[in-house]
Image (cartoon, rainbow, N blue to C red):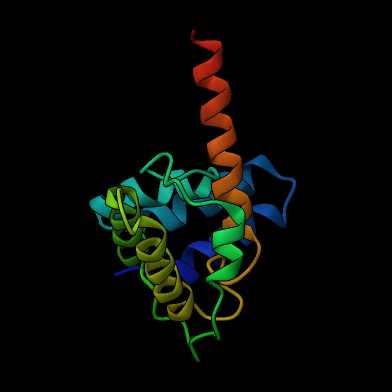
Amino acid sequence: MRLLAELVRASNRVAATSSRLAKTAAIAEFLKSLESDEVEIAIPYLSGDIRQGRLSVGFAALQAARRPAAPSPTLGLRDVDRAFDELKRVKGKGAVAQRETLLKSLFSAGPSRSPVRSRRLPRRLSKAAARRSSASACSR
């Protein structure tokens, strides 16, 4: 099981260089270390998106769900993916409270420097939603 923190380190290596070859090598090295189902999860994350599409979670809900960090990285790629699957399924009466509970659980499992804890995740989720909205508007 690959930790989300490992994906963050790979992403940081990519961001730290301007060399396309170095970027490609960093991504390839990370992807080679993954199991096949983890590759399906990691590729959208590395490109600033998520597999599940729109989660119906706003920036304010993400900020409100922030919790004290876990002492060390324990959150795996599959853990985050499952949490996003659960968030995607939440609908109907009481959905806001259910989403809040799920988000609090997710945030408390992430270490303080992970994208789940930082401002990166809320921004990425917001940007992903905006890209999908723009794409659907253009296809009409």
